[in-house]
Amino acid sequence: MKNLFRIFSNRTLLILILLANQSSTGFSNDSPSLYQQIYKTILPKAEQGDVSSQYNLGLMYQNGQGIPQNDQKAAKWFKLAAEQGHVQAQTNLGWIYQNGRGTPQDDQESARWFRLAAEQGHVEAQASLGWIYRNGRGVTQDHRAALNWYRLAANQQNADAQHSLGEMYQNGQGIPQDYQKAAKWYQLAAKKGHPQAQFNLASLYDYGRGVDQNHQKAFKWYQLAALQGHTNAQINLGVMYSNGQGVAKDYVRAYKWFYISAFDGVKEAIHNRDFIEKKMTPAQIEQAKLLITEWKSLK
Image (cartoon, rainbow, N blue to C red; front, side, top):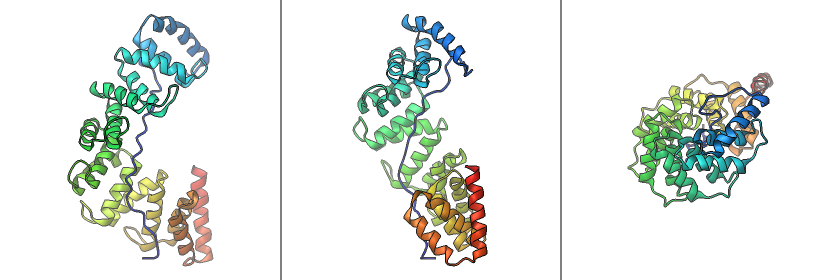
């Protein structure tokens, strides 16, 4: 149906490195009094150079556990631990410099600390360093170096790195374009629940790139991404319901997904919603609105 807009795979990569939320000593009780006790216990040890205490103190300041949240003090203690080779502290410090939390934003310092952690085998640092080289943030852009770091993280089952490898194979960045290898890496990340990888894999099945064209499989992966809130997947899922591709034609569910994806003001979603509404009976529109209400109640 030429009157409905379909969304193609995009190249946007967003690598999110989250600070660890649990100390290496394993404390997890959320009682403020417990954290205050821990703070009193580890502060003198941290001041004496104990690396685990320095790292845990950084976490406590970062998360505001038992003490007021303070990004500057978190950065201070992470740096002291990182300078002693604490791999998670190095990774956290890379994130801090990348985002300018508690210290001025500095891409070069971010790359330096991620590299130190990556060279110790830290998987999130390896994935982040891949992103840094791919985008030339704090380093000279180098797609071959990006591929190397992504592979190391992907082989440790990091879904972000697997997805990024898929994108680089699909786009021919630093390596000859290869849709089959793109599909391989997307599938590994998609099975871990990575929504962009699910969308990209669905697109390959939708158009038969690197895999045999299979609308049923495209529908499956679009649906999994759509259920996680992926707007473009929601639009394409609506198209498949509208056209009866990979699933029985169903204007009610098509309208539901177009309506949901239009929440963000995406013009293709709004167009598709309004277009399909003209083909529906009042009863079908009412049924679709019930499905939309049900969706909202689950969010």
